[in-house]
Length: 332
Image 1 (tube, one colour):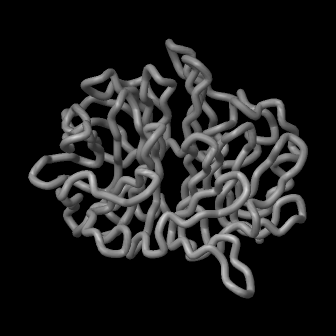
Image 2 (tube, one colour):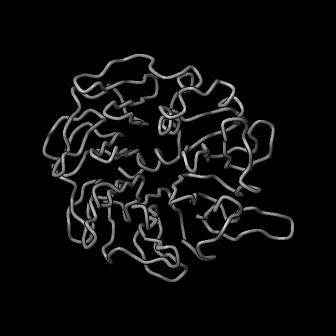
Image 3 (tube, rainbow, N blue to C red):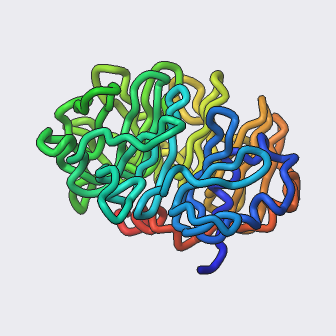
């Protein structure tokens, strides 16, 4: 299997693991989709069999010394990771976690790792796919392309898990010009849930590719939406940033693939970057943005092109054939 670390995924925790050596990344053989730091460990998820020669099955953890498996992993691609307290949630194209010859944990697209073992949320989670996870510190939000959650609850591509059961946020449907609008990226910021994907309306509300849920209803996230999808959000607690394939807002504000949310609308960061942005990471007020070839650094005044991350990270470029990205392009 070809080693293919997606730079967008690496950047999510790149600043926090800058001191790690190239051996850390070399130990993971395959396609890494997402990285997460949880409970002092680096969690990697994607499509790979081994890490440091150990069979880990699509998800693994690094404790600063070695890669180890999370039991026997999961039996399909991990698309996103999220942590609530010490629990790690994984979603993707898998049916079982810790699969064994005599069974395993039936999970259907999403499962919880409690530090010792895998736990199902429900045996019948969704009827299609979960692409993105987010948390407000208490609840877990799942977004993607599905019409039912919990096996029987009608849902339009997004739902909430409160630790015991699934529920929908509203009855409104995410719609695009070609049908249901897939959710690709989500984030919780300032007490609100942000979602982006291939949709133009939510219910009767215009929401071009990006929307905010305030706990009661959905609304468009300022500036008449975006002309392209967000691939990744990042928040430092004060400011929410978004990067992706968008070049401007619906009202014509130029963004060039990177933007920040001022509480009511999206604002540019200088002149932006030159190509679709696959990844974003924050170090205080410093913003790192990755395109397929270049890593940019925003110092508060302008973007600097060049190498600002360790060799172990900068040697990898974004995978332009990432299937989540392909979904976004197909739904334009």
